Length: 350
Image 1 (cartoon, one colour):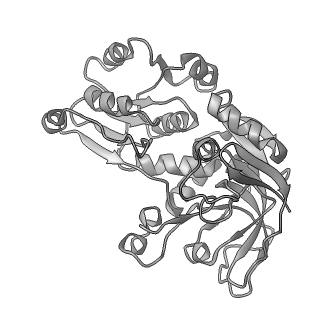
Image 2 (cartoon, helix red, strand yellow):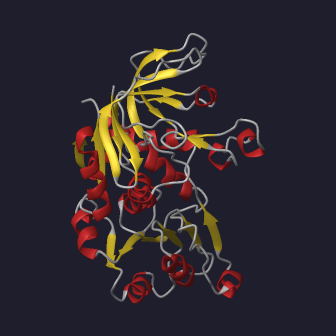
């Protein structure tokens, strides 16, 4: 089969590899689309300790079921179904797995990292993922291309479930990449009054922001703090989401919040530079809540699918480029440069 194989930093090659065989306890999928995640970009340019070359990465996957192992008991899924695949796979035994939080399993193994990913014509979903019901059928009114947005959207849903965004809330999002815009749209879906995206590359967010006129865009190099205070009647935002790997966003996000504010550290920091200094009295006297967020699980995938199916989130506003597998390197570079909002790799036309 044709696949894009990661051999090392800035070395990814489209070549013929052996097609995987579906085991008795597995499901085989023909991949149609796999969207490029920011993590894929980091793997390509910097490597990743959980990705051992040569490896096939990619985890924002849609496709069709072509084979079901004879021992698989999964009546919801049939050959020919359009499907997506939940990325995180837990051990199934630990405290977090027993609660369904597979993403927080200390031995979590993910599609596109430990297991073969979606930048290939075929993918075999492993037995443990089948046990955790990780293969989900797409509704008839959600295309395979649209479905490639479900995984990143599910992560945003997981990040927001702690924040209880509702009517009259003012929300500030640091970071105007695809994740930042997804968070912004979700906040609007939940009834937020004003949703503000802050990014130092104002020209880029202004370009993509034309698809989202309901959002307020601020230049991260300007007096955005003063603008935020004006927009919130000098109270400060009710919610802040840091959708970028930046210390300053976390520090300033806490400082900006109004009383009873909530902040999500959605974007992780580099492991060798992840310590920040904050005024803990702000948290104490304003009763601020600080939350973390990592990946997502089956429930968030289902909710993301529902939002797209119901038209609450429109994938075509996010997907600004679709490239064939042969141009994956070009796609990775475009995502890094910010030239595109969401780039999807097409393996088979759907």
